[in-house]
Amino acid sequence: MRHYVLLIFTLLVVPGQRSYGQGMVSGTVTDQVTQQAVAGVRVLVKETGSTVQTDESGRYRVQVSAGLSAVASGAGPEPRVPRSKQLARSGRTRHMLDTVFRGWCPLTVAPNKAGLTGIRDTGFTPEKEFQRMLKSYPFIRLVREQPHRSEVVRDVPYGDADNWELVADIYPAEGVEGKAPAVLLIFGGGWRSGDKRQLGPLAQRLAAEGFSCVTIDYRLSTHALYPAAVCDVKTALRWMHKHADSLRIDPHRIAVLGFSAGGQLAALAGTTAGNPELALACGGVGGDRVQAIIDIDGILAFIHPESGEGDDTKSTSAATYWFGYTKYERPDLWVEASPLTHVSENTPPTLFINSSVDRMHAGRDDFIRVLDEHGIYHERKVFADAPHSFCLFEPWFTPMLETITAFLNRVMAAGSTAGH
Image (tube, rainbow, N blue to C red; front, top):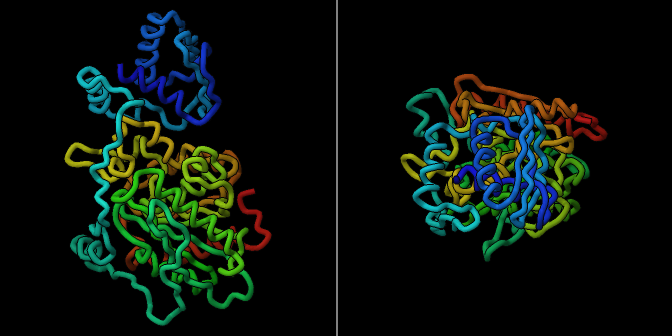
C-alpha cells in the first residue's frame, strides 16, 4: 500500500502541471517497483470508480474520479535511472512493512528535528581528516592558507536567515585590472559539519590565478533542514551579482564550486537557476545564474544505484538529518535535491573531479549523458587511489588546482562559446 501512496504522491508533488478534480494521472511503468505500484492503483481506483490502462511500452494512464489529478512532467519514456535499482530489496520490504504497521502517509509525516541541535558539529575539519587519513596515506600533506600571500576580507555579511547572519570571506583576484571572473566556493561536511575556512587554501590559490573567490558559511543540518543550505547558496549568488561593482567581479563570469556536500549544493544551485519552486522556497527570484559548475566529489543523485546516501541501519545518516525524512518517507525531497533531476539544456559547462570512492560519483555518468545530448561542454578528472577528502591534501591538491584553472580559463574567457 505504501508503494501505491508513494506513486500517487510523487506524481502530485513533482514540478509540472497540476489540476484538481476529475482527470488523468499518467507516467511510465519501467520496473518492478512501479509495476507493483500500478497494480495497487488498479485496486485503489477500482474502489473509487476510476480506471487504469497500461500499454505494452509501459505507459499508464489512470482515470481519477476521486477528486485529484495531475500530469507528471520531466520524465521521458526511458528514465535515466530505473527505479528498480534505486531501492534494495530490503528497502522495499521495509517500505511495505512500515505501511502495514504504521499507517504511513507522506502528507502527514512530520520531519524529524532531532538533529536540529543549534550547535555546530565540529566532527569534520581538515586537521582531523588529515590525522585520520595518515593511517592509510602516510605520504599526504595538509594544504593550508599561506599567510600574507594575499589580502583576505573576513566575515562579510551576505545575507541573513532565521536570525542567522550569513557571512563570507573574500579573496580578491591578484594581478587583474577591472572586473575579474569569480568563483563561489562551498565547503563539505555531510551538510552538518565544516565552515568557510575549509576551502580557503583553494580560494587563495585561485585568487593568485586571477579569479576573485568567495567562500561562504551556510546553514547546516544542525540549524535548518533542506532546502535552507541551497537557499543560502542562491542568496550568496544574488549578493555577488548585486554587488559586482564593489566586489570588482564580472557578473557574467561566475562559477560555483563545491566539495562533497558542497559539490552537491554547487551542482544543485547551478542546475536550478530560475527554478520557480526553489525561488518560492528561498524567497528570491533571479540573480542566481552561473556560467560554470565545478563538482568535487559531490553526489548528483541521492536515490541511485551508485549512491550510499540514506543508510540509517546503524545510525541516522547525514542526508537523513539534512532532509528531516528518510528516503522512504519523502523520496520526492531526495529526488528534488538531486542535481541529476534538473540537468537540462540550460546547464552551464561542468567540471567533475572525483576520488576513487565510487559512491561519491552517484549520478555523474547519467548527468554527463544529458550534457552530451545538449552539446554542453564538460570535463572529468578522476584521481586513482585517492580518498574522498583528497582535495585537502597533496599530492592531489596541485594537479586538481591546475585542472580547475585550465577549465575556468577555457569556459570563462571573455566571449567563450564553450558549451553552446
